[in-house]
Length: 90
Image 1 (cartoon, rainbow, N blue to C red):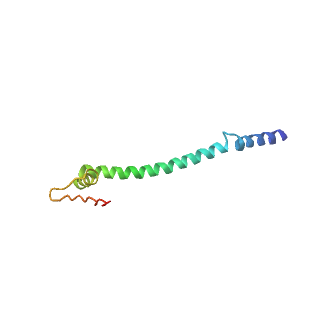
Image 2: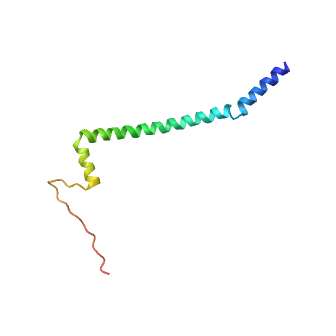
Image 3: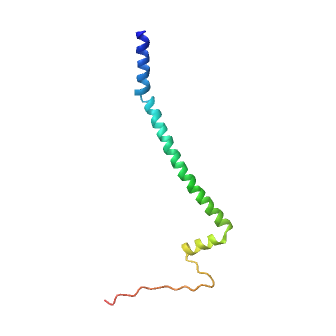
């Protein structure tokens, strides 16, 4: 009976205290949870990018807006005014 108790305590000690036991399982679960959170944020970002790609492929308004903000496009019925700051007299 004593031998069985010693073996049980030894096995429990290995389970709780060794690097391959409970501690490693806990660290792996934490890593999986962190990865799930990162995957969710990446999924949301990808959904936004997919919607933008579809809009750019099928919608002229999105392409025109992108050209205006990024490339400085001016429409045919628009007038461009450039405001130059006044120089100091000194």
